[in-house]
Image (cartoon, rainbow, N blue to C red; front, side, top):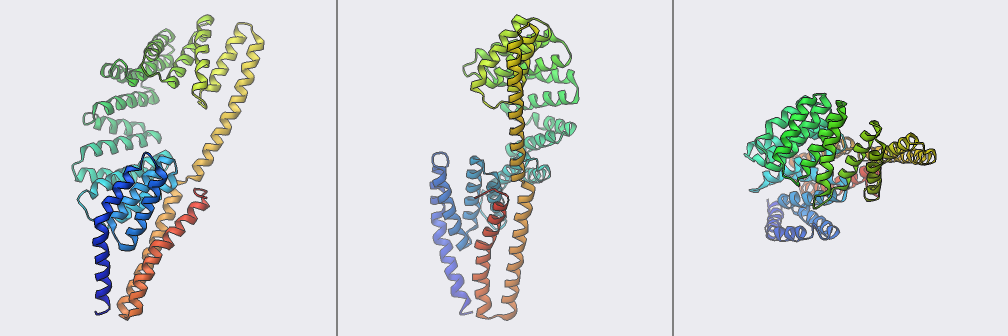
Length: 413
């Protein structure tokens, strides 16, 4: 007892003194989040190490949360996942008034990343963890946000009926901005199901609820054009595309990517109707926008239409020029898709998460062995093993092992 009490008395003093400074350090990190992310990362790592040494779980949750957020903003999603998972793991031992808010947000952020990388099962797991927490704490805003994310997760898996049901269940609870997005999503889902009348109903409702300059009104008009194109009602499709173009061109902030798609769609429809002068006008407008939207997936499709147009009017040299350009852009597109697939393999979120939890299990097993050793021997050696050995494995072994796994996955250098 004479040996143990001074050790834990020292730890208690460390916790109290650290606790008075953690919020100051967190405030400093927060102040650099948007302006100097590298400095914010360095400060968060310093705080994380300090809190690990003193078992300050409040500081560990916050520091890891910031690190996850900072790496997510940089696009380092593998690292972001690890830090978010560490924040959640430490939150199980933390105790502070706003803990549940951090836990809800951490689950939501993890669900978002996993969905982006098609780790759908993991996305669902963390979405529902967040949903349960938000429900238990009557946090309606987060509950709606998480259910919205899960609706997108279901949509990505082509579970259209389930996605529609979940979107509709949160519609009335949503704020005006989210309501507009839900109506757009419901319209798109209806198109996927082949329910074109229902799609028209959703897009018309979206037009009624959106303001004149709203991007969702542009989307609704363009999507109505798509629906009528699907129905082979070419004149109606042209009418809605042109309405969308008129609004977009007169908008204070022009969405060039959206304009490009509408120009291309109208150009294609006039080409199908053999109204070549009108077709040339809109295909040219679409081509003019291309330098402002590099690497757009639809570029090569526009060049194909330009080739068809020129061959149709008897301009074979220009037809061949656009045909060759189309082939080049297709090759570039295929290379880009290959790079995306390689990136998806590199950021294999299922594998990263599986290896993370394997390391956590290993760490906890070692901690249990050390604890049993302390209880059975009762000597100073066992106490030192517990204090030194446990902290060594917690701070060094887990981190180094995770770093090795991330290096193996080419996530870090």
